[in-house]
Image (cartoon, rainbow, N blue to C red):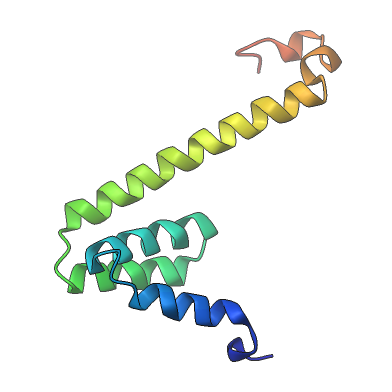
Length: 102
């Protein structure tokens, strides 16, 4: 299987060439995407490329912090909605269900 077999490769190449986003924006959005995908090698490379392109370390840190905060919100909302849809609160009625239970 080769990446050139898929149209997504062409879409990525087109996006990379787009003038709608600055190079700085492309670096930081790319970092956010690799972080959310959990690719350590890709994220490290993205951080390295961002720094080499002149993006300040503080901006890379801010991107990581914002990405983590957004993902935490998504995880929390997903858990709340999933629990509500499956009546998890009703399924657990013992003392182990109390907030702060150990």
